[in-house]
Image (tube, rainbow, N blue to C red; front, side, top):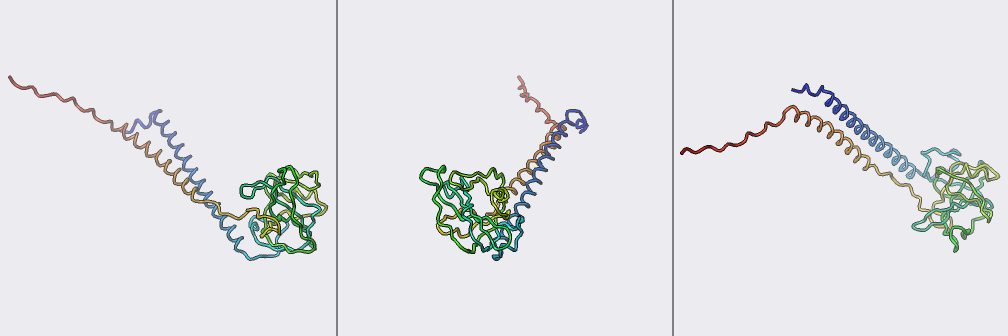
Length: 252
């Protein structure tokens, strides 16, 4: 009854169905892997946020992924002569600048401190913004460890003498400074006096979408297999055409 499945036509249909179902099944496993990966990231961030504050010196100069968002304290003196402006940063719906200043510590490399956000000048982003007073002398800064941002781009020198960047990447900035700095940086939390919060908070990555995609792809794979079986059974058991109804002749 099912010998037709060995015909070239049905072998081709079987190969196509098998390839489609396997591909959809693999996509489901890929989404399942992303679900687990995002869950691990959420657990790591939650552990970092919940950890008690620690001295920055307890962490390596190039922080590990598990160090991001750890609350730290560091003591030193700001170097406003090497102020760095980060262009095109948003706070709410406004676009302005984040202000970075190296903090020179008694021992070890300096660390870049993100003091906070400032709005642009009256002429827009092409003008140097108004910078609040930067504390002088020894200060102790509390904040969170941040990792270098991707796609750092060039480090420019503005007409006012400030360094300007689009992305925060201390290793790229280090080439413009007269002393070594850490590759990680610290976002002041709370921001320095006169600066506005930058709005960077650790957030959890959504995982429910990945589970939904897993179910979706595996349902599609099952539908392909079901469709193949259904059409094969229909081919093997064609419907018997109904006999035409012949009205009975009446006698005369």
